[in-house]
Image (tube, rainbow, N blue to C red; front, side, top):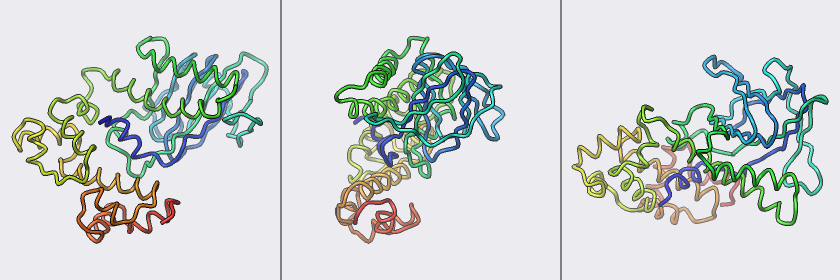
Length: 312
């Protein structure tokens, strides 16, 4: 069970949107907050990202070719050739006929920077614990050579955008989707040994990881603390303490969270009857499922399905 993929899939509410941005110095672009997570890939040239809002701990970051930035909460920010350059307000995307993404061109006649900018549509109202533990801004420099797969994805994106050909409409969105997993994998691998323990460490923990995998693989099973502790090879008390310390909540609370997250995804993305959704998430009756879902989401499953845009 690939828990990282499952965790992201549970939060996804749509395909990513993206715009290719061309800036010629002097240039600056003010980007408002978004309901999701933002990303930028520097395809060529250099620029700065300047966080906005009440966050004095977040400083401007210099970016170079191949650098990737991920904004966990879609924070508002400025992209510019220099932090002191005045920034324009974001304009609506200008789409080229035949291009898989939008394009924006701004600035003067100086050195050029080309970026891929966009948003991942993630449910920030109920973020997975792994995403909650990310830094507000994740900066992955290209120059350290530690993540060749991420660098290769950036190069492939640049090539497809520079010279679109047959298949580009399918290739570019797929690469942008893959980019999110590469970003999170790189962050997981780059965390210093001194970093505070958290959900990310649970993925590699020899006791907690098997229990997480079991819950993700079969949320409908009638798991108990005892049965999960047996998977982990620990006593009930030792397992519960270790799981809670790494995951951030007790085993049964996480099980309920994952069941409800799975149910919400089924309601958004399928027309499965509520009895089927209940059975696939471990509830013996539609009534018991509906009660649990309303307690977690504040509305009945049918109402959630209607407001999320999926036909009942």
